[in-house]
Length: 203
Figure 1 (cartoon, rainbow, N blue to C red):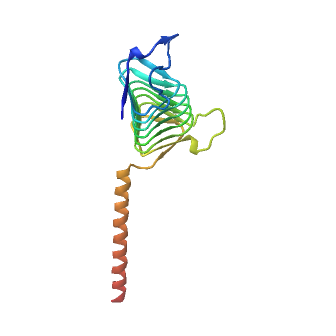
Figure 2: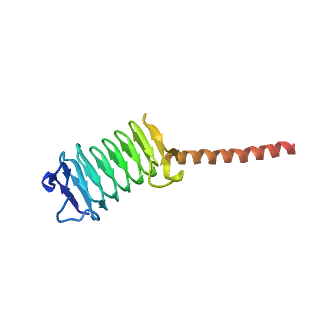
Figure 3: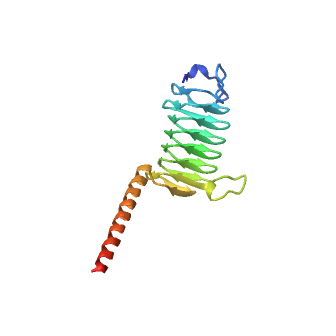
């Protein structure tokens, strides 16, 4: 899988906004990894979709007029913002905040140095960590269901506060394995106890 590295030379600043990257690659459907090198502030794309990972160095954020999607992880030095959704096959990590007009979804954990805000749901299989506040389901353009304002994760960690939304912790995979082991052991003990009761009644 090839890796595209972008530096300050690949961007032009006009009216204090980073213009969309125009070059050899179409980043709305890039088959590879994206690495943004250097402290570039907020780098703006019309949409950003790569099959591999998206990584931006410390001091650099990513903003998309539409969605941001990565087949693997998304890791950004400052903030992540998308008018539509943010999706990663692995984890999502931002040094500052994470914001999406639609939903935020990660195959593993989500970590934000500040807060997290989503117009619809937030979902990750792993640990959800944020320092301040989290908002899910703040969609203002239509009525939404409880599912669409649910924050689903394996486990929430840290001092962050759920300011709006419904928190649902599924448990980490290893936690679920341990739970099942204990349930299986309890079932074995229950069967043995019933056998002993039966033998006692036969005396």
